[in-house]
Length: 177
Image (tube, rainbow, N blue to C red):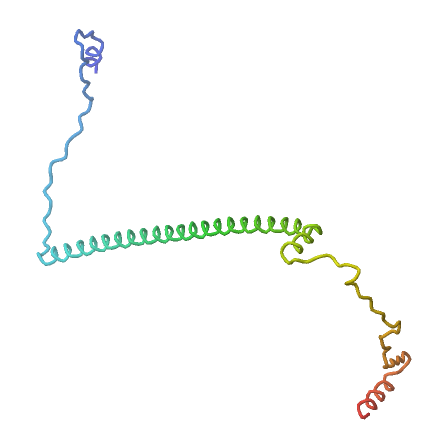
């Protein structure tokens, strides 16, 4: 150990430092030979088949998941397209409704303007050829002042103090009348 300290304390003129060596070198294990198994070719072939079957199952599983994923994505896309189609249809119907409402309001305004008495009179004169009545065309009718409304002939009798038995008897009498 004293020599190793002296080596470390010495000044080095080189640019690269010296590699330090550990005090204790790990011993390498001698190479052991593997025991060869006494498996037969059939066993090895069966294991290879099992491995291939497992790998094919993994591949089939992967393909199934991919197909499932694409199916889900397709369903989501189809649903979104239906939603978009319904939304555009709704928007077009709303535009149609607003146009019909505007037309209704315009028609109401035009009806209100056409209800003016002077306009009605002008239309009657122009289109229908009507004229105002003269005093010669007026006919007066005399109506008698007698009232033509007849009074009701039915009488309504209300007995408030009638008991239960009396009301049953009255009901039976009215049935046989």
